[in-house]
Image (cartoon, rainbow, N blue to C red; front, side):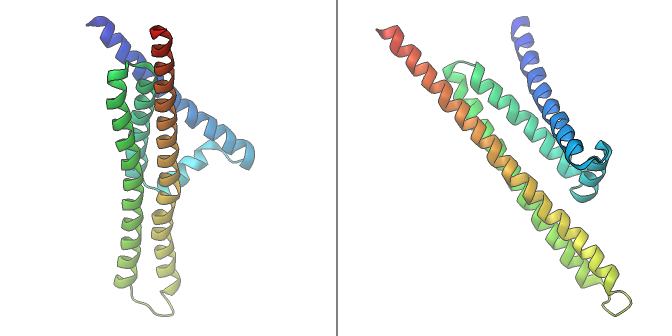
Length: 174
């Protein structure tokens, strides 16, 4: 019982370490290229993507990393469960990205339909419209490649571990 809890805690800490490490490396790469402060990307992300999108995607990424770790470290019988779970989480990331895209487009169209269009208000209306469309398209630009990347890593790890298991079983038979 205790060893199982320590094993799970170890896996959760590995997933959290990988997730936070990727965030730090991304920030380091961003700062070295643009010479902006790291808080600038956080301000941009919360203003364009929204806090709920960031929190949902972060949680799904963290659990997806946990699935990848479990696919690489558990027995053959348990790998399939974590593999399927990771695939579903990757699909959920792309679904959320597309849902937020449709939400942003809908909010932009709603803003356009509720605004009075005349010469004095056209600049303000277009500004609000582009803000909503920016959220709409950036969620897809971030979410869809991220989903594909996590799905690819998961499939590669699963197939590699299956191949290693088959080779090991063949050597045991000989």
